[in-house]
Image: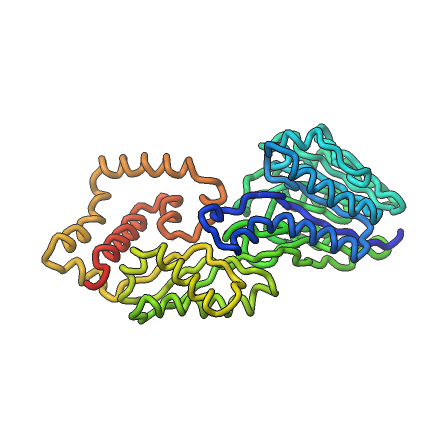
Length: 424
């Protein structure tokens, strides 16, 4: 059996709107909006430069339905470059691709083959003893296990299973095409090229079961390096799986300790310092998109919570004063605490003390609890699945967990910080 190399990519989400950019006018936000296209261009150029033997895209090439053709035409143009380089591309449609109507009629160059959606299909790579087995999603919400229908491995060939799946639980992503790790291991394939989970993971090495992660992070929920996997096979055995970062912008969550800060400007400068350090240590020359989480005990707690828009603008200006922007501040979230304790506030002989003392007792009122539960259930039903399962907002996590004592304690802290802004 001959030796070869291939690229395994997934979850490109081409032209996906990056969350939270529309309200900002900075050039950095514009750069982020073009990131999915630039990341795909980088993937194609890497494949050509490395002269890989073929490429796999394991689902979610697109980001759902789109109303016109430019997205598909851009992808077709990139595939044409691979066609010129004689690099075959095997595409499996995932849940987001199944929602697209235009892609069902758009034709791609001859080097691109798409797995059938009606049943599992086996595709050979010309000139290599390689067989790929896969099935595209016939519809967006596919909750059936597809693995039992995949064919037995082809004797004498290197067998690759291509599957868009959440496996069984353990992911913030919707539970599409669930299956167990044991099922994949027992199938007898040499490599499983998975998609759907946006983090790079090597689930198993015997055989290799791999998520490459998505090609470009699109929000603060997708931090760290993103890219594809370069797989080397020698004499029928996988000898290396190298994760190749191909993102053009990188997301990072930065915790900034502002304990003891006495001036608003001191906080914004501390943010700028943290951003500078993160650019140096985490960006690898890319634009860094940051969410700032402020922590620590400070007398500015109330002012920080009351002036969140000003805080982001002033922190952004502080980064601008240090030269050409290499980072973009997506949001600043104060999670500081007051220098004045809750006990001290409750002991005050005024209406604020009375209100703060009474808030936890509200849960003893059955009518209040019932109304609160109904309101929060409706609120949760309107939230995306990703937000429900992965948020850095303490109050939102309490809502999701239906931890109403923690929720009310958080509300009480927010109220105390706001009403004591500028001093206790």
